[in-house]
Length: 383
Image 1: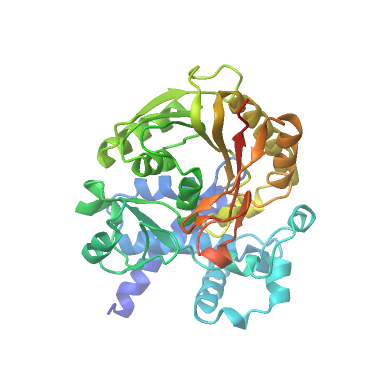
Image 2: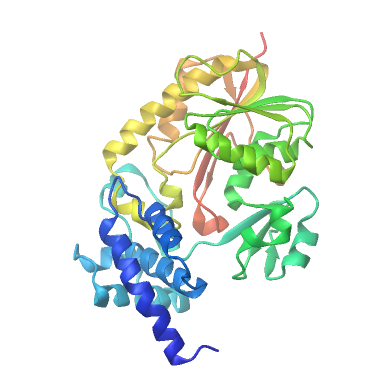
């Protein structure tokens, strides 16, 4: 148990750091990136102070709507933290109307019809999900402790402890990845088979590439591309730790000049998006994302789909996934693609239980405990 002096010492260091991050953050300086950079520069900062700083930053942006545009200061920061702690203890002490009015900017109501509970879910602290190697979730949970196995998604488990997972022997040995549960559902929707050839077209740092490889038992071939080469270098490091060998990385700017002329059994397009599905994890983005971003990204998503579609073999599967929930970036993009590419037919999405019977799937935080996601699947018609 911490003594009062220890607790106040933690706060003395955390409060000015949190205020510095909040005041410097903006549309072009995301708070989560700035927080990581700030904490990295604080040599010798105790883990308790790092956690307290992050808690204050994220609490401020989750509850910013309760301050009517006022700037952050020490007293308001303390109030935001108190609101978060009250919500953690008694979420129903906040009325639905208050949550609906304050948790998100007004333009969101024009762009999407959210089911009951979505905005309330945004006010909760995010859960930490892990993906174990196929068939090893129980062993990983037993060794890590403080874990809960998912009942819906195989190999997924929620971590409930406070240990730095990146420093554990299990992580260093590649026994698990830190990956949101709904990102894992995207991999399952792809349903890649050993020996097939796949393209993870917007691979980023490779979380879904590694999952595809695990599902393929490291057999076959995965092309992984991204416009940022530094992300592909990060993928190389992650793949080595996870002992993934059946992939090739190649830069791709999203244009018509593709990284390979290969025809694929499957293509995953986890497209850049506004990220509304991650607003519980990244609350700063609520206040920097605009309707103009939605429109611009929807056009980019349409172009990306048009670029990758010709790379499918007849009978090949195309999976479109975005961690956003706006109509323009989900149903709007799907309608545009199906109008322009009649040789693709909607295909049932596969999840943990098999075929869902749906060709489009919405995954909401309040239902799954993970980030919001939208998935659509097509199969190229055989001629």
